[in-house]
Length: 222
Image (cartoon, rainbow, N blue to C red; front, side):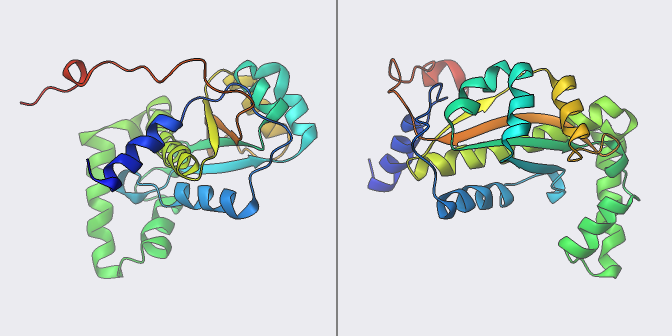
């Protein structure tokens, strides 16, 4: 096996859902900015980036999240950084809307003569091919899928830096959304909660090596 291949697999084996963090160790600003940048560079469908990353630094906010986020409690107690991923709702995803126009014009910087062609392709996809734009729940779920890709990039980048992490779904979505809305960091017209993740350094080693199904069970070449 080439050294580059082994490095990749070693990083994947190092990464695990850390359940106990060492509260005395903090991820450096440089390393965490690199993790955030890995998230920013993640691929999303049509490059529309329908997500937002909240880095929770307020202890008061952590205290409010603690009782309604059972899956995040040990992270709140010991992780260096807690992150909440938000997903954009239908209001921001319509083809002719302000957000999509901003992405096409200002972010992608598509020339005006080509912009409407790109918009029409996205409209076909969102309204007919995938059809999520007709329903609020489906639109939010589409955005959540993109947020998960962003999170995966960040988890992998952290592992490459020797930093532990934990993806977190164990929380009351409605209550977390209410807390974030009350704190003024979530506009319920535009965003819903997708998932959480924490980053830091393990306080104990995993109890066993990573277990996965064999390749023969998960891959079929057709």
